[in-house]
Length: 355
Ligand code: NAP
Ligand code: GDD
Image (tube, rainbow, N blue to C red; front, top):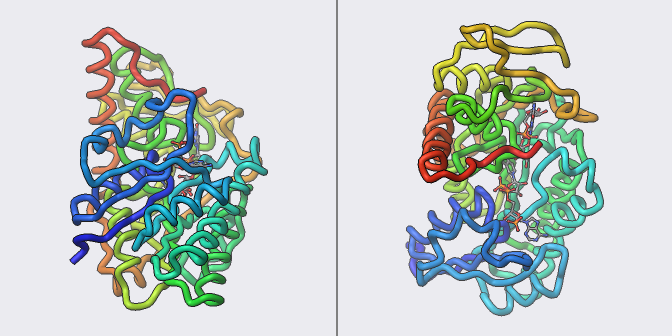
């Protein structure tokens, strides 16, 4: 059915970009990924290194801050489907670099829509939306009808990207959709995000590389799913008769503390928590402190609770999450335990989450 189609993906070097590329290649697509120029061309692309030998996988240079480069990519590739996954996607960084975040994550989507409209208006467009758009949530659970109240420059940029995508659909009749995706994780998740930071640190502690995890607000709650599932929905949104926006979530919410407890339990440590707020710690069954809170990981404005309702996606896209919360935590811990063991065996330092 998809044979012979051409897809262009921004953010191809990220978590979702790597899974989406694999999915589209398996469906017979010719896949082009837009990559930024780096001083060391091979660095930072490890998630797609295994695809470089695939004759249907190609990289093309460009940047979401540069309209000409996106126009050129459209002209050259003439895609049938365009997936805008590229973003400055780390929420804390959006307070440190708010203008860059607005430019890449917000204006970047407008540049893509303009390039599509000018160069290939029949191309179908997917915008990576976010549950961060709901922020200080107005209702529980959140649906496609829940009003937005973003809590970070990143969330504000994603609201702009959502609205401009809807506006271009309504103004120019483009087939343009936004997936409002709740947090989705995997062994390919960046080490700065809380799930991967926890699983990698638990693996490092179990192997004797670290003594404890340094963490922020453990009371925050998220609706965490598996990234491999979520990219399938990105594709399905572009296969419908009519373009529309969809919430993709698991319908469950768990605290950061629950995630930590499960991850450490999976490496053989049963945690007991003590104290409150920034003085919170957790000890293992031998009384050794394994988690310490650190004020530097708290945010100026927090999104305390996210939980999505995915009824529309289930009815239209046939969506159902395939992996449980416990299964996701175990998958990520197992992968990091294996990575740390491999590093130890070969005598190099295992990956370390950024401080
Ligand atoms: P990610 O791992 O952080 O990947 C981000 C990608 O964007 C990387 O490939 C990065 O390239 C690229 N990028 C950054 N700045 C760029 C620029 N100026 N020009 C072109 N490309 C640029 O993110 P992800 O987790 O895969 O998420 C994919 C998308 O979904 C993002 O838009 C994110 O905001 C959104 N989202 C993610 C989640 C989630 O839970 N994962 C949930 C909702 C929405 P480099 O490798 O060169 O840095
Ligand atoms: N990163 C991080 N590091 N987060 C921590 C830490 C820490 O040390 N300690 C506690 N947290 C809390 C954060 O305060 C937040 O409430 C929660 O853990 C999740 O943080 P992240 O994993 O950084 O993800 P996020 O929810 O802010 O954003 C992710 O999901 C969004 C969808 O809701 C990103 O992938 C965004 O790009 C995405 O749009």
